[in-house]
Image 1 (cartoon, rainbow, N blue to C red):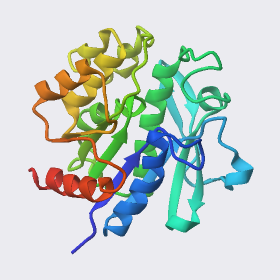
Image 2: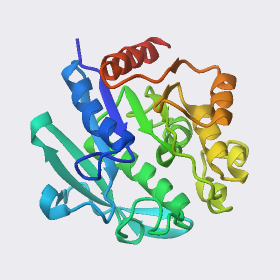
Image 3: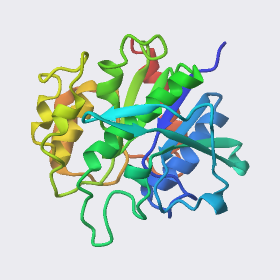
Image 4: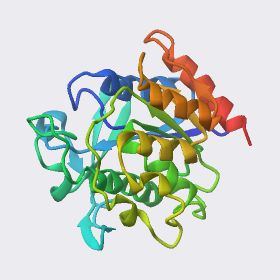
Length: 270
């Protein structure tokens, strides 16, 4: 039987970033799923705080070189890769000088969200999917983590729905306790409209706050995982209203096995 393929679109992975709830899952979940017999590909943004020399990142020339258009502006897409030898696992990095060379992830040194976080999230999501197309690798399941990956379900079910690599892909979205208080750029919805995505499709993010972005992700996902012991009660309500299959929060000892079972459940739901 052919191995099932799982694409991980993560916001953080240790050791490239300091240990956190999300970065530890980003490090150990793909390895665990690979050990459960599935084939994996793993992505994260190449934030400026990622030490390229220490972590031995190098550019993949054959994958780099295309431009992604965000808000009518071309932005070069650079792909880098590094290996976690102990896990026999590669991590692909989405890089762009305008969006990811600052020395912080999603907030500045004062804790304020970057004004262009909407474009950074769009670029990251599109960058991953375009790279997977170049790899000619068809994922059976796509697991995106945290609000920075919330655009992925929309893109898979609308922009890339006719692409033979993605037309059968299922999407799982992990909700974390990572709410932000600011509202993203009010024109975010306009930057997502194309021949496949209508204004109606993204009506939820006419006001692009954390709750509405999460709501949009749930609208297009096939399953949802609770990634934190506690999450925003309003998000809990949205999850219940979505009627999606849900995997409740799992502790460190059992989460890999339970996530793997949940993936199989989602894949079996035709």
